[in-house]
Image (cartoon, rainbow, N blue to C red; front, side, top):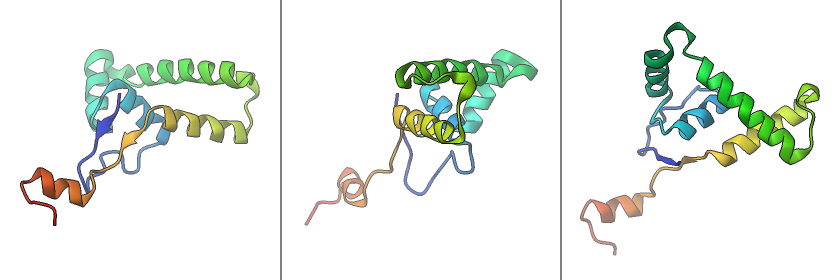
Length: 108
């Protein structure tokens, strides 16, 4: 699932990329929104869903790349993070020209 981020607003600023991917996968509009959902369901163990999701995604990446999970190097960890962010992208803001048309201004 992809989420639209309004222009000049980044609800994932200063958030770890793997947690951003988790939030996007869950359909959350921001890290704070996902945190509230997880705290309501899991209480003081609110990071458990993220840890379980990340474990599943790591296993999937290791299967696809034939990498043993226990032996991931720093390079492999970086490749995994890239794979994860590509798999769960945050949609870029709408270009200015499209916003003008959407707001009723005509293109010239």
